Image (tube, rainbow, N blue to C red; front, side, top):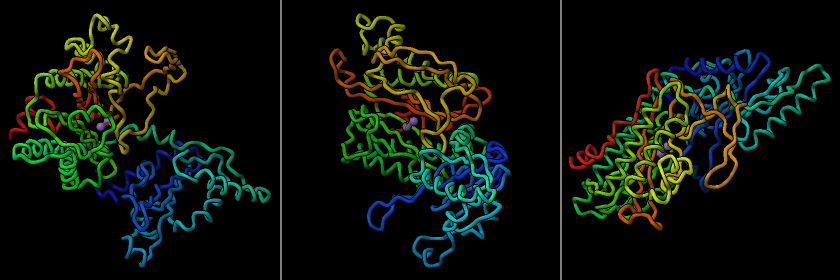
Length: 465
Ligand code: GLY
Ligand code: MN
Ligand code: MN
């Protein structure tokens, strides 16, 4: 359990959700299942984010039931000395009521027996759609049992609604407790990036055979030393041309002096993700072409950061970054003016796409690509159509989300240069991304991941140290 967030915070979130369920609503929120790896070994357990948001409880085999009148019932693993000898401490239903500020708790083995009773005389049953394998069928089975009792006067819920619609919107706005955890997660990750850059330069100076996995080990060391439970996603440690593979993993490739290393890695702390990318010269000194592209990406990130403020649209930072990236590509000759035309043409026709093919950010929270609509809720009906200049596909656009204080997003422009016809050889196989985590504030945004520098000179100085 997360001991830094008071139990009352989870109780308040449940109260807010209950108010949205309606008086005759009921919500079912299971946690994630344990996943076997092979024989007696499981994958590292990770609770379900929605469940955790409402309980702070991290044991597996649990399910929260919340009714519109604000009553919380937890089903959790019963105390069992023998199982606890093998698998560890269980809170148990009896202690759970006080520890988690619930109204009632039962052994999870009672769920099938209790649910029909809890569902009786409710109008709407809410649960997360298409997330928990088998939940839809299980709910259907419970409802069948309620229906069997209608001739005795019971009412059976007539509506099933997706609970994600309510919870995604709540989760999109991070409260002070969440922001605090996210700041700490980002600080650990930033230290891990610093440590790894310095270790890389040192090992190369010492003449060691440095591999990507060595750098991955440095990251992991700092994550765990900082108290993080695990990486928030599979760390990307990409040496040289591997940086041009967007979802590369840390593998065995050699890390060579003269090449860049792209590291996209962030830890998860108490259920919250961080997501940082830095690109640095393996031996601590940028070459001319590397530096030219690096400074373009950095300038594009600065433009995106400046566009990240309340009242702006989610797409504004992306558009600001694209403008700088496209201009830079023209300036250094990655894009030939006689072929692609002016800056406006490059943007209009998306001619930058071969070198910048992803978006500039995403929501960040408990999940690295966090939940929350990217469309402004009050404007979903305003659909416009445009033809994608590259694929010719007709795309339906809805107005992008308006940024508000408390939203957290990443800002992560990049340039990736695969060898190709007309691509200046000096830039071949260079892949650069710079990614920071931003909390939208009343004035603009707070970058919470800048414990690791981004300016080229600062990175070089750090790696000399
Ligand atoms: N590490 C995943 C991302 O940057 O979106
Ligand atoms: Mn990332
Ligand atoms: Mn990201």
